[in-house]
Amino acid sequence: MSRWRRLFATDDVASPAEAISAPDEFAAIRQQLVMVIRRVQSSSGRLPPAAVVRARDVGDAVAQLVRELERRRSIGASIDALVVATLESTVNDYLPTSVDSFLAVADLSTVGDDAGRRRAEDQLCAQLELLSNGVQELVQSVRSGAANPLDVHGRFLEAKFGKTDLSL
Image (cartoon, rainbow, N blue to C red; front, side, top):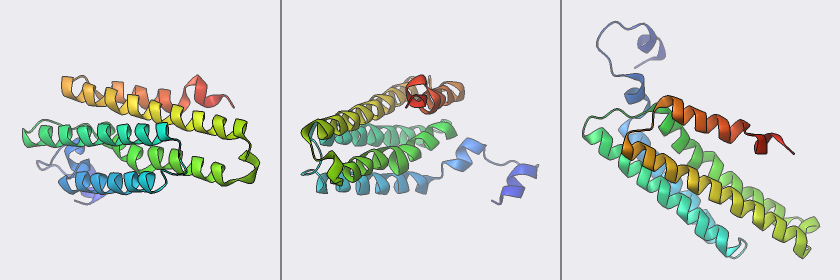
């Protein structure tokens, strides 16, 4: 359905949350997740072992969330567009950017010393742990029915604009 028709249609159309989360969208999320996890596995020799485990934890939590959203769709429950957007951002941006940024920094000769490498490893592990915890909390919120748009949006704002993100 075109954007204009969705905005001005008076006939009975699907809710915006249902329109945004088309069934093939979950297949695309799964496919992107597989690609990111393959990239993590193929780079496992350059990544700290703890980071590989945490990245897999993020992948497992994302897969759980996709299954839960598909289950909710199959019973006719509504699916919040912000949850889907958070899920897409996790597999398309947050997870791959953390891993790729570490690999780029690890390849720089300026981080060749042990202290610099340990600091970069600690930062990567902290980012992946934050992602894992956030997605796991989202899974629990969706399962319990507590994932309301205000809660999901609040988590997004805290993640993007929290005090730790604004300090350099």
